[in-house]
Length: 217
Image: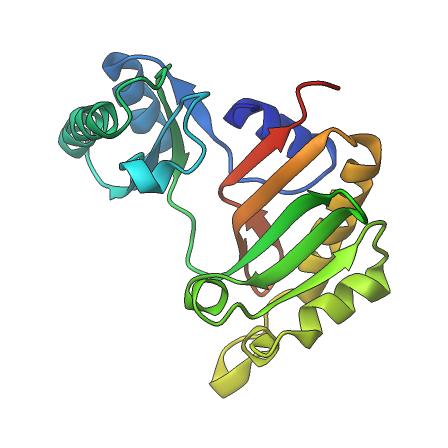
């Protein structure tokens, strides 16, 4: 399994916009980085053995001061050590809190019959409860990506329903196309999730991502 830096560097290599993230290995470094970034910040556990960080208390949002940083760091280490005592912990990752926008999910799975399949959907209950998602087999062009986005039932939210500003559909299309290009060049990727990609009126940015590669290749 690849760590955060690997998937983050790969996304940047393919011009997929990401929210800057900085690794810190000690509490002193965490405080220094947080003060340098400016508050509020997000803290995420960094471990090669933990893929779903939120399931083990490995993500803390909206940290607003140095004192909150200290408390968050100690609470996170205690919780993660209790839930996954054998996991290797090499520090935490820090990001600025992203501005609110529409959260979408773009996922990848390597299907043994069809090859890489990309999934698209809105975040939260739309994917967890309603399973309102669309799929395409790679390679994917801009027309296919647009169809993926518009065919989910909740697409009117992206188009600006109930007076909301419309989301930047072209920014989502660009991410899907770049992801498709990445998969052609990296056939050893078994799973990859950008979750969430936050979409604004103009542009979109990946806030979190995870990747699983076939280590035999």
